[in-house]
Length: 279
Figure 1 (cartoon, rainbow, N blue to C red):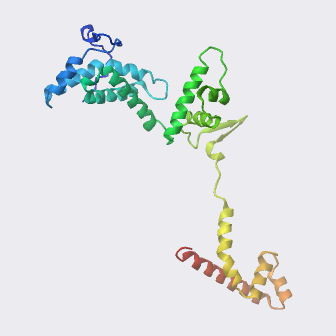
Figure 2 (cartoon, rainbow, N blue to C red; figure 1 turned 30 degrees about the vertical axis):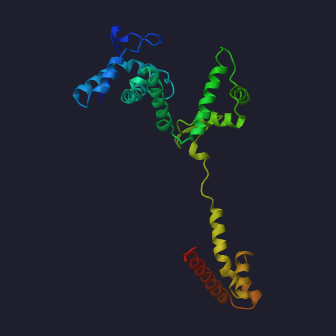
Figure 3 (cartoon, helix red, strand yellow; figure 1 turned 60 degrees about the vertical axis):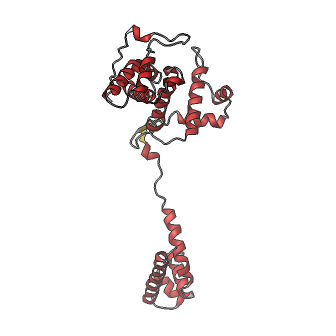
């Protein structure tokens, strides 16, 4: 059903308050319409009457949406969400359960809050933390009602709400969780400017070194003692092949062949173990 977003109010004759019930100016008397809705079968006549009821109550939905302005969502979008909540309230309302306004207000309000919870958070925040956020936001507003009142501390908010300081801190952090910054966002520290991406760490090559060492460990242990000694002198003591040859009494060419053969064997065994299932 297309929803007319105009804020024109129904004629005064349709806003007669039921005896003994306090109503707003935008609470029309549609009790007879709701009773008639329950008697009509599905069809064009019922749809037209339903649309008329929704239109009559639309100003109230807009008023409720206005309570949530300045929270990062466009007023027109909030009005659409409130109108959707109104349609749900009209469809689910049972006239014998009390005044429509008493049922519609929490239904519309719940629809708007659900919109904020499910659509407005850039990060998925647990419901418990969202509740903390709402309590903290309300407490901050209450504690700064008087002009000139300083911003309340975490301890002040905790004392006012009965929450722990850790819970207040979580709620304060959630206040900033509606939106996220781009990695290219510019940050400043004094006269220096840098992007958010510059503050993030990169891959640590040391992790690869650990993996390689563990992969090669068993292969090194299986080498003959002389070949292990040659590799140790070459790669840990940084000796040249000529010096190793002089120390062992063999030719430099033989040292070169032993190093190549030993490294190939260790590499082959390391890669073979990595390819094994469960390695």
